[in-house]
Image (cartoon, one colour):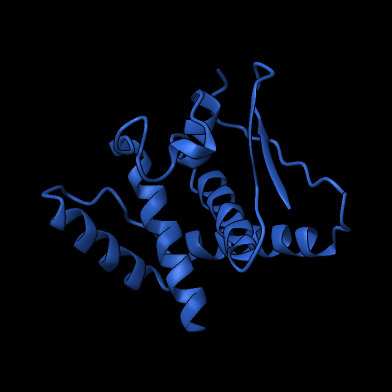
Length: 152
């Protein structure tokens, strides 16, 4: 699978994904899209890519430095979804907010995350639709999503 993100200015970043982690990262990145669009988190993963971050900027050795503070809520919420999915659990607002509070407290920050179960239901609905589309796609087909956040 090739994951390509095209920016409004015509540039792109891409990554070929194979092996056992390919499916995890496909769903993980779709989770980012659902979280960031439904919760209007405009400077998460997709917002940073729109600003010019490359896929290789997200991970060791972190060539652009640590993630901006504004990106952390999306990362934490997506991490909560990933953890719940791996455990076969349904993520609740109470659990997500508690995880976020612990994460930010550990960093010496107040948590900016305060989601409701209705928020998470919207994310789940969008994510279910996205995963269905992705799983229905055939090899060589393209799944296109529009990013409504900032364009550079």
